[in-house]
Image (cartoon, rainbow, N blue to C red; front, side, top):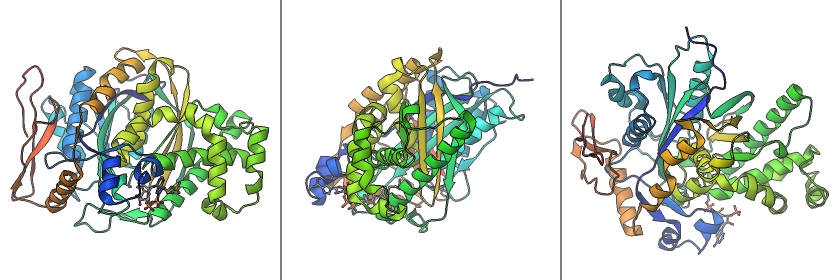
Length: 463
Ligand code: ACO
């Protein structure tokens, strides 16, 4: 019988994003957008994308096998595997089942869990499921494993620069360096048509960009209000941004993250919280009587609250923005890539700190939840997580595509989406050793993957 688990949360993480990318500045010029629109206006630096040899399955195979290998976890020790994704390659067969060969090979087929889907929120649903499982009476003492994997692609037009691609794997268990403060959690779920994928023949969403921004901010407000109420009931004192060391947001593009954090300060102002000093009060006072609908449309409020938030933003949010700015929106993986950036930047000083995460998926589902960090024990400690993820090296070794080649790749991917009976270029020259890649989709739509040989020369094993 397993003992009652304590400090359940994330023990280990691995991040994978494609080595192929395009600079936003280059894409901006190519698209004929005004200079600065993608870089300053959206706040993005670069965008990763899959070529014909990569997809959400290959990326998740890479992230999972790399995590198990680098932390020395025996695949037999996994008792639950949950995938979050909104990139549909099959309407029935889960991505989780494509990952099973890693475990079957070791004789482990006793693994609960399937896929969760709701736009960018599926990864958080998967994470909650795994954490709840470890905390439950049905836990069998083994680890949970969560995978968030998405390829975010948009049709040509204003949404295209808000794409990206990545997979993130997270090992879940007790005594974690990143443990959940389970009582500090609030959700906002509603029905909206802000971003959805009704056309099953296309990988591209139908998106109402402006509505999606407002829905995101409304969900944020609602989660924050509920969380403040819950905290105040539990602790008997007021909650504000001061009580959190770092905030991590789902990041479709950085500008929305800046606006979101400013919105929390405006919420604190409306609640007369102690985070708001006298000069901030003066700056925000003209907006105190706006209705909430008016407040989402007010450019002046946006400017004033961003100004008030700036010093807090630099300290509490900026450290989590690196990977989302460099890789783009990774849908389900986006918030966890932001969290990975925080660990990468601050791992040596995070022990004892509280981090608040906000997860948003269009349609819509959202949650705000809190984690506490501690140094942990090797191999499950913050500095080892940072070195395993090796973010600096992964970003540095990418290949920048010129815009014509990027557009051509998008066309190939459009054509291939939902297709059968083709072999890919099998060109894995840009992929790091140990990366999985797609080789073929046969006449029965069955997908086949290979693994690029490891540095130590281990032979590739396809399945
Ligand atoms: N220099 C500096 N800034 C500029 C410039 C310039 N030359 N040109 C425009 N800008 C600014 C704009 O002022 C705006 O900033 P603001 O919001 O602070 O005013 C920003 O750049 C973007 O310009 P817009 O004209 O608002 O952009 P557009 O409407 O063409 O597209 C959008 C932006 C709606 C985000 C689009 O990319 C999109 O639909 N993306 C997908 C939806 C999305 O990501 N939604 C977020 C939540 S849902 C989710 O995660 C999928």
